[in-house]
Length: 150
Image (cartoon, rainbow, N blue to C red):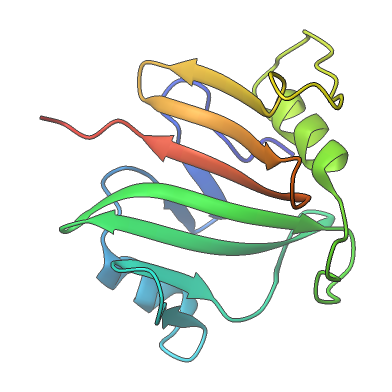
């Protein structure tokens, strides 16, 4: 199922709701609910979903970052089951393949232990989508980041 629009970076959460660079915090609260969209205690202007949401056959957790009232980044975790992500679990390859499929990228990107290969990024006129991997501690972040109008 195509969830990310390659032309404008819109991320379809379900048939009735799509997140874009124009989505407001209030719209996210209305869609997810106050009990499911929580403000981060550690990151300013960041809100996260407290549980996974099934989209098609996968389960997603989201972190939405704002610059003033403008959404600037959607970070996400993808799982094949609703269970919480285990510490040090690595779905990096699955998430890389999912992003490549969503964005029609046929480069066959592969991760290796080369420090120069610590990210998979695809740039578009609307922003960037990809994964940043920290080989030192084994963590990674999948994200979609919008260019902010200046």
